[in-house]
View 1 (cartoon, one colour):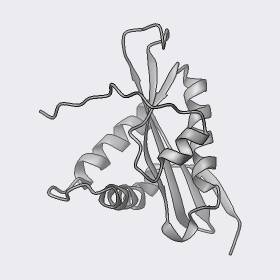
View 2: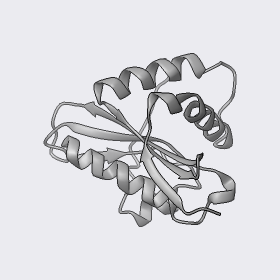
View 3: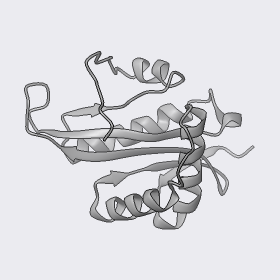
View 4: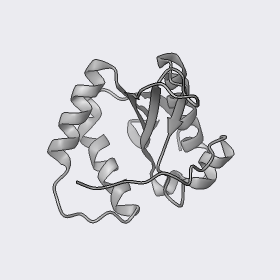
Length: 151
């Protein structure tokens, strides 16, 4: 096996990236009742172009074996985040045959560095059961007040 290398996501990678995102959502138990491909393609193209979405890929040769993603949003500043700039992690996925090799940690470190450069004061994620250990080891703490209302 080749050693894993890392590079940024480009628009040319989007078809594979989107399929890996859908696989990730299914693994996490999401109900597959709508074709997300058009909406994901639109989102990633717009936000890659305006710099409010960044992603790193892990590759074994030419094969993408891991993905990461961070969306940058801005909220009114608050004491825990005086800049108001927040990184939202998504699309953290590693091919099952490549797991437990540090790839997810490497990818997470890269998008966290991007968040620092962007000026984020906080990073948030809704972690899968599988990811909680990784995020806790990297210093993330639970916020038990997170709630969501679906419109």
